[in-house]
Amino acid sequence: MGHQMLGAAMGARTYKLPFGHHGGNHPVSDLATGRVEITSQNHNYCVDPDTLHGAEITHLNLNDGTLEGFRCTDVAAFAIQYHPEAGPGPHDSHYLFGRFAELMDRKGRP
Image (cartoon, rainbow, N blue to C red):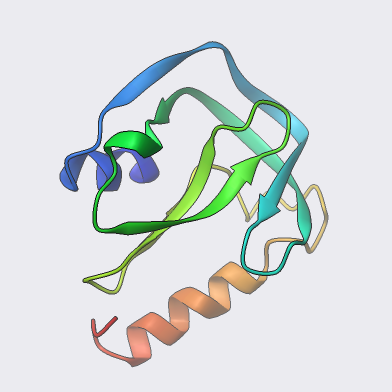
């Protein structure tokens, strides 16, 4: 839900998915690396990327092309829509915890 809240705080709208994303084994593409992560998900809404400003899209769901992650361009923040701690990959998304720690070390600077 933090992903949707950050998107809303940036002025983006959310919309209800026809079937939602639930369970493990959802393939998500990391656009920076081209790697595919196997993710665990549990959500019914998605941030509309066409209404998201001041952010760079970082992750897309390969099943339906929906937004799965973005990073803010003006503040030190990023969000993903899945659960990296669930580890269905099992280690596909662990780099996100390191990325978060780096942001904390920079003390809020993008």
